[in-house]
Length: 88
Image 1 (cartoon, one colour):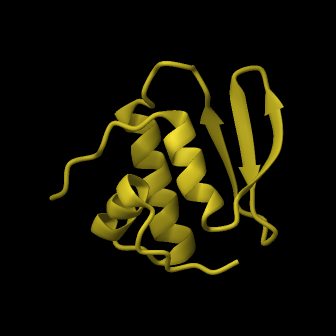
Image 2 (image 1 turned 180 degrees about the vertical axis):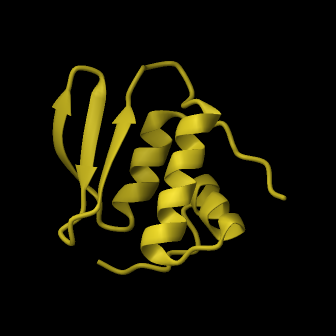
């Protein structure tokens, strides 16, 4: 089983933009990202801190459910931005 990476919110947001998530709005320190097809994610943005493993796990689970990534593919996508299984 692949270990979940420690990533900052900005790194994760950058990866999600590659699969067409756009910033919808921000409420305090929480950025809401949305795709044109309706999928929505809320990412806490605390500068200088990594996202918790629980938040990373939620994002991995949503990539699996929404886009058909395997767990390993989803983790690799968050780490490197590849593979992109979803086009815009």
